[in-house]
Amino acid sequence: MILKDIYGRSISYLRVSLTERCNLDCGYCYGGSRNGDDPKRRLSDNTLLKLIKAFSLLGIDKIRYTGGEPLLREKLEDIIKETSKIESIKIIGLTTNGTLLGPRLDAFVRAGLNRLNISLDSLDRATYKKITGKDRLADVLEAIDLAERSQAFGHVKINVVVMRGINDHEIPLFAKWALPRNIDLRFVEFMPSNSPGWGEELFVGEDEIRQKMDLELEPLLINNLNAGPAKIYKHGDYPGRIGFVSAISRSFCARCNRLRLTSRGDLLGCLYDGSSIELGPIVKETGSIDELARMIEYSFREKLYRKSPDINIINGFKPSMREIGG
Ligand code: SAM
Image 1 (tube, helix red, strand yellow):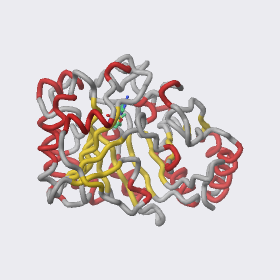
Image 2 (cartoon, protein in one colour):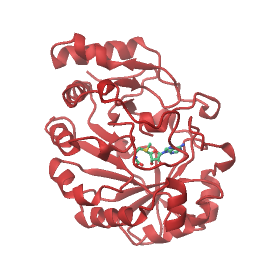
Image 3 (cartoon, rainbow, N blue to C red):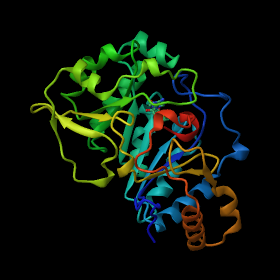
Image 4 (cartoon, protein in one colour):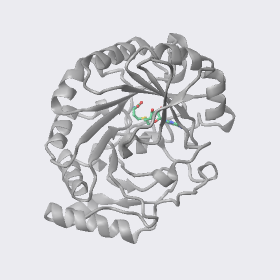
């Protein structure tokens, strides 16, 4: 069984938000409630793993754990380990703010983690604190050093959300910092969200980011569908690479291969479509993993909820990144 949407796009990638809680207060990310999730409404580890097994029967081979801050989920090492035992899951990634990562990195690698994205919007201590509300830049930089040295992830991905007047002056600094290292630096266009910190005036598009960086970039062709939405470039002979995740100025919807699962068990086909399928009740009603996979496929086909490949997201629904996992 392979999951396909009504536009013929195959789905091979599931992003799973493990918690709505976060230990940072990035104004552009948190929305409505800041109290975090209610464990009673959260999928248990067993239910989550049962769902992932069912998705693996439907052609999903890549799982990314995100949040909130996924390291706040109890027993994350065990969740990763159990995921790695599912034969057809080849890629297990983590998207984290990196503040709590250093001391647990080895355990995650031993459990089977093989992709890592760390979110870092400033290399300057004061600006980092202004954006995140916390003085934790040193911890993040230390975790990045450890991750790079561990060689467990190929290039460590660093995501920088660019915001006008807040961190856009650091674009050349970020490039200079990343190029000599085994880092994939990805400049992410600021996307509309339900957070009070979102504002169109803060948006900086890819063309302007490139102008501010002012470096000759050579496209790298990554022959791998799991490469994701970023377009990756190299500069000279440097090992570090520079990418752009430009959901606004260059839509990549036509290549979208992903679904998103919230910590409550809601399955979303698209960040910018408010509708979802509640999977919690479906798990309760089904016995075997095969049956669960069939039910998921059935609900998916019945529901016309993946946006078309030419969606104009700027005018649409505004998601809670913290709930959905970005
Ligand atoms: N706490 C983890 C972290 O910081 O990576 C995972 C969750 S966070 C919601 C995932 C990613 O979404 C982060 O890289 C964050 O910068 C990004 N993000 C949040 N709000 C965004 C927005 N409005 N536009 C673009 N990216 C956003």
